[in-house]
Length: 137
Ligand SMILES: Cc1cc2nc3c(=O)[nH]c(=O)nc-3n(C[C@H](O)[C@H](O)[C@H](O)COP(=O)(O)OP(=O)(O)OC[C@H]3O[C@@H](n4cnc5c(N)ncnc54)[C@H](O)[C@@H]3O)c2cc1C
Image (tube, rainbow, N blue to C red; front, side, top):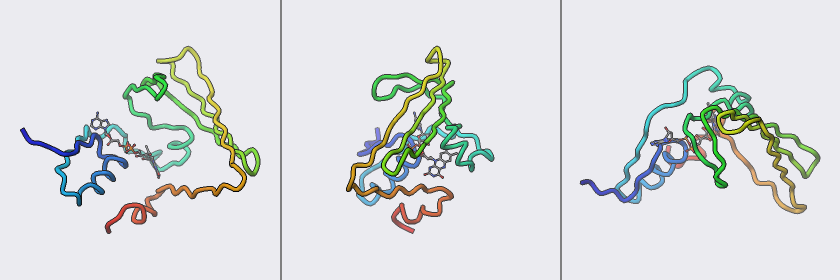
């Protein structure tokens, strides 16, 4: 039986990046990848479809940190509203007839503490920033 030091399940953005960083360590790494579930289609390139309408949810059933379920029927819609200079509201509508009797809304409020620096968030949209986020070529 082959021995591996590290087993990474999934070769997506997280797993692939981890493997890339661990490669120079000389550890024996096994990556297990189950294969594509994502359809290749035009809405892949729509920020609204991907990030607001959350079009792509895998059919896997999983539980969040509180044990809240989700099924393959889950449809979520996120709405971000800037209330004023220091406050943002994120309203998430969760509709999952497989797990809940009716849709419900979770509201998350983000408040900036005066004096705190707002950290930069870089989205790799279009992969223009890819070379900067991953070491190597
Ligand atoms: C259409 C689309 C466009 C996007 N565009 C952008 C963008 O422009 N910019 C941006 O920053 N983000 C974008 N995102 C979001 C970004 O892709 C995700 O945030 C990121 O891929 C999440 O990384 P991850 O490693 O958590 O999961 P994933 O990248 O989804 O990787 C998980 C991997 O694990 C595998 N896997 C799952 N279960 C198992 C199992 N049991 N056994 C083996 N393998 C398994 C899956 O097949 C998959 O390859 C986009 C997402 C989608 C769907």
